[in-house]
Image (cartoon, rainbow, N blue to C red; front, side, top):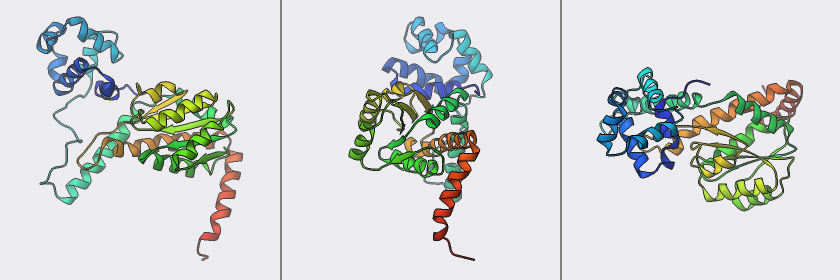
Length: 284
């Protein structure tokens, strides 16, 4: 896995931090160069906290301690003053706005790529290929991603289902068994309906694959396999909307891995799909 930057580490857990921890996170994000050249005592004095509090925060980010944290900052290209996520302003013309949106999307993919783990893709593919049935779930904007996922996997050898109605989703979840799998997409990981679906899935012993942006969310903690997407917010485009491309890239990767696992069965499925939809094409 590509080394995850300090910024990404902070961003992925930020929502779940305490007020005091958020103040530490905000200071690091705003002053990365200063922090990388300061002692733990100097930083604690500025923030009005105990040295141990800052030390524990670095441990929460996954570092062995303050020294490890500082080394990471010093070796990263970490400059909060220069960012392609610079917000769109009223003075921007159309092409500038378009380029900023493209740049933000590209960076979302780059950031998400840094978070992927080989074991997660292998485990997810094994679960999907060994399940008798897979249900794709999502609410709101995530339901659109779930539908796209279903549209992809209809071409695969696995048996899958999807519906947009939440009551129908609950009914589907209730019918899953320990031989089945649920694939839940939720940007926040705290949507009440998504959590209820996941609880129903787990109660029935089915496997749970989750795509979210928050690894500490309740939904992520229930998952057998979790994939983390990340994105930056820009004017008129929320973080949730920006994360869609990254989520689709994760799902595309899983799909291709599944298809390559058994090329013979995959090709047979593709032929059936292509034959079925051939009648919708104009003859040449």
